[in-house]
Image (tube, rainbow, N blue to C red; front, side, top):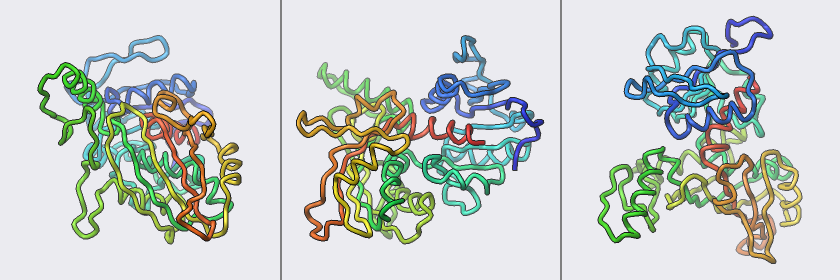
Length: 341
């Protein structure tokens, strides 16, 4: 499915949730990557209507999101939560837009492509006006591992995530700033956005826990989304997802088991050539991927690559991955999908 604009005409693009943390990054990505468009429309809730946001030297007004917002829109980038997506994405498609949705609303729908451009761009050919952007920690974990999976299929992944405040939105980032300030000044601070104190603390990801498995939603996303994106329903994935007091870059400790033997040297060589990935692996200086180096930058950083010595078969590797949650984990991936469209 494509929009009704004539061949060669520049698209009209809308951003839903433009004032949120990911929405702001979507605007910046479009500008930084010189995305070709005829018009950019910014949509948000009624309380944000009338604000302006900068784009290409102009101050663009934010409009209230309504059921009529998508007339004339060719591509709509959604980043306003699953409830908004479920209500408005079908309306946008009905009005002729192609939707790239950053929420969890449609990711497990077999009729909706779940796309990481470095992994499965061919999935876009099947879209019916709606495309899902994967979960941030899933994107960051499996984009670099795809280079391995293509050469030596990964049969099992064990993931431990260290997830930044940005994954819970701009309000959570501000809560981290405010609670850290209060902690350092020895002042009381009652958390309002997250369920536990955030400054100098970490806690299990606060998504609902499935009573049957004991895993939370974030952890189960890693399993289901990896299988869908890799196109491999047999791959085994277990994850432990934790929120840490970092502003915007997720870290992931990953151990994976391949079908055949594999060496750290082979993995380093694959990572050095993997699209969207930067190898940071310097044991002599003890310098490996860190949020400070990933924040604000497009590449996913990979390092700490070593054989998993608990597996005598030689088929397992342990490594550490860090990526900017707001960029490749969300906005950048969505814009890359729009570029392919």
